[in-house]
Amino acid sequence: MLPRGWTDFGRQLSIWFGFYFAYLGARSFADRNPAQAFWNGWRVLTFEQRWTHDLVETTTQQVVNSSHWLLTVAAWTYWNSEFTVVGLALLWVYLRRHERFAQLRNTVLLANVIGLVFYIIWPTAPPWMFTTYFTNGVNHSNGALAALANPYAAMPSLHAADALIVGVVLVSLCRSVWAKAIWAIWPAWVWFCVLATANHFLLDVIAGIGVALVSLYAVSRAPRARALIASLL
Figure 1 (cartoon, rainbow, N blue to C red):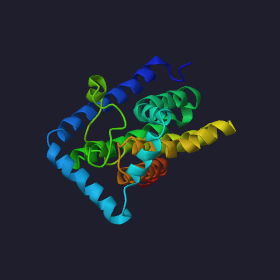
Figure 2: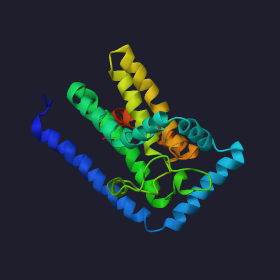
Figure 3: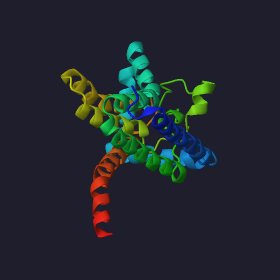
Figure 4: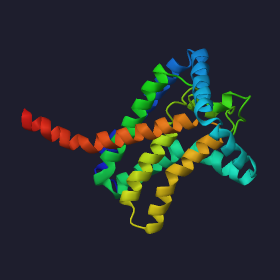
């Protein structure tokens, strides 16, 4: 079942574990200055208030809070869209569409590296920490979940970035019309859920979309750039 055997599969796993440890390192930098993270989050909040005269996040929270079922689905989406869905999408592409795996892997990695840089230089508190405006849409107090999450990784939203990358790639790879439709809707649903659960500001989501578009473009142009460099050498 493995296109290139266990050695290559192990190599791919080592890449992702390496990224995870890099993420933990970035979190250690972000955790050092909570005051700066809160100040940056406040700047995002006031910027949105100034330009939209309202907070989109509070409206989405009112929508999901009107239904326990909808709130549960939104919270489930938030916790699983980043690692579970991205991981399963990478595994499926690796096994079934292996010729496109490197492109998807590199795009996700590039987007997440860009995000890590921002988390180090511009740590930002998420909306749920501003209790005057928002309620905590998901349970962040669980010890295991808190240990895995970076509390000041709001800007940019990698949930938004990875959902768009996975959606774009799987729409192009899936053959079923229904599968294409589901993956086309997936990014917008994730964007809605991260706003509704007060885990990201609208500006965080927009920044995440920008990170995804830059990563998709950069990786798609990489083969042409390598060919041009090789022709010049």
